[in-house]
Each structure stands twice: as structure tokens, then as C-alpha cells.
Amino acid sequence: MSDMKLTNEKMRTFDGHEKIGTFKASAKLTEFGEKQNEANELLAANVNDLIKRVCSLEDDRIRHEEVMKSLASELKEFRKELDRLRLSDKLNTSAIERLDKAINLAGGK
Image (cartoon, rainbow, N blue to C red):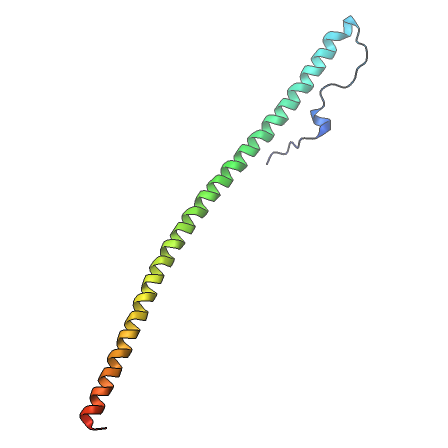
């Protein structure tokens, strides 16, 4: 961020309403122009800093979206694997029960 912080005092380019004589008008106009240029430079620096910050936030948002999509994909794959394991467990349990019954019947128990 810019070191040039905007303040009301820094943005003030016109000091007063005193009556200016003809001979002082050009000096006062020059003074006003210089102050206005300084204010414009401060504004430009702060606007440029804001643009950089917004771009950085947009980049962060894009990175976060990519990470979230990746996590969602991994979670979906994990869910598939978990469902497969549950089904295998159920099938294996049923197979074990059938084998146990067959052994019990064959052994006469």
C-alpha cells in the first residue's frame, strides 16, 4: 500500500477566499495548480494501490475456487470408495453367513 495516505489536509488545494490583487493572481494560481497536482498524485497513487489490492483479491478468489473444486472432486471420489467398501462389506458378511450355515449343515450342527 502506498505511503501516501489521503487526508483532508493533503487534498485541500484552495486555502481561502481572500481578495487577490492583479499582481498576485498568477502566483496564487500557480500555488493552486501545484497543490492540485500534489492532490492528483496522491489520488492516483491510492487508486493504483486499490487496483493492485482488488487484483490480488481476485487472484486469491480464483485460487480458492480452484482449491474448493479440487476438494469437492476428491470428496466425491472418497464417497464413491466409501460406498464401494460398504457394499463389499455387506456382500462379504452375507457370504460369510452363507458359508457358516453351509458348514453347520454339513457338520450336522
